[in-house]
Length: 545
Image (cartoon, rainbow, N blue to C red; front, side, top):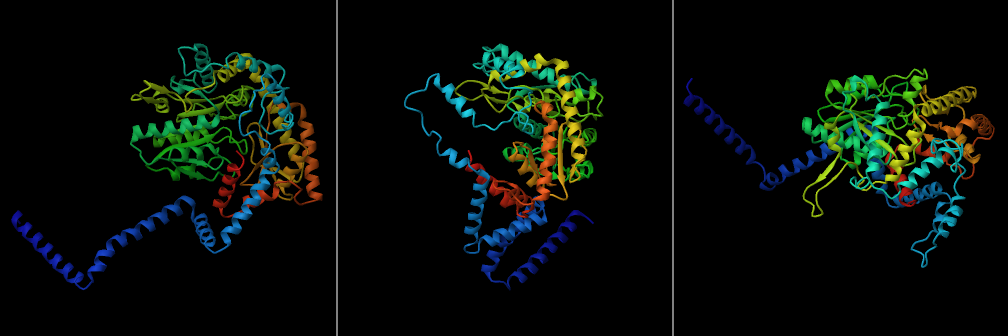
């Protein structure tokens, strides 16, 4: 059959189709023919939006959310809900609102001069007695006016005027930052052959900024490498909330995957979420809620096999796990010695015992880190380039971190690690001796989470708070945890005694105490409409700062 014959048959078929279509459409009104196409597109758009909403939120959460939105349309219902939310927010704020009413709203007409120091001392008296009584919070041992505190405070004051943005002027703090990064990297596998020998990084203001930068760099690196323009990242339920913040800031679709029965990242479940748009998966060593190390080596292999980035959150473990391993604790591999790890965040202001506001973000190589930087070429103020989110940075904090690390050395960190690991084990043993409590999972480090099947654990937390102990409330499952620091070394037996007595108090007299937050935590944990919980948190924050 020649070309002309084939063309003739095709032309004839098209004519028959056109005649048939015209005959069918001639039976319809012109207006319906005009309306139907855009209406069909609109319906398809709605269906796609609903499917994406269900896929993102989950079927149950989507149904609950739609139901609650429908209920709010009923006259008076939304007003009632808002009034109840206001009551909860006021409960969360407690006495904070009345205190704010006495705060200054403008500059004093006459300055206080050096008298301001006396006023600050007066204000400081209202702070909670934190020495040995807070989970995490203060990681340095002793009193704030002595020993290591004094050293880092003096270091800060010497360089409080400096800013590493002006690297040609303040060369000392540039030097300090370079050495803090290098010393931290050496603890986390930079000297191992498997690291590739290019580990690099920068200091940041804290773990959240370190994570934000790692996520941003991973997103942009994968865009360059694979052309991904609709990025997604996958994290276990136990991963820090900073990843949610990063997802919102950098327009990345976030998938939270339930942990396994050991409360670790579920590698198989994470694998099921990986697709062509995945830029990053995450593991923690250890995770903030339960102090459990994720299977970093397995996650590294998974990331390598798909050619995607893998960030390890070592904000808690970076200055403990390397020394705990040397002390003989069974610590699995967690750093750049693991193939597939592309970035790490580690806080120096936690177990690095540096001043607050110091963290480090590290990358496997310079190619990835370059995507962290911002370079501006067309600004009338001149050429501009910045390594982190902040432009100006406090050189005093960098100096304080360098002073902390240099003053302690490996021997100092080994000593502090030995002390806090021993206290952690003592607390685990003590909790196991309280029959009403159970430990969540198997803690690998210095965070110990515990719950109860026979008493309200949030009521226990309220009783502990009334005794001056400030722990952290958790959910999924309902529990509380203590993050052990050097502050707890001399008071560990006091803590266990207070915990045992608090459990007994709740057991004998169950029910919320005046001013306690147990009812709110309990309600928030069981409330099916998570959007409502989110609104409560936003309202609380808006009225608190």
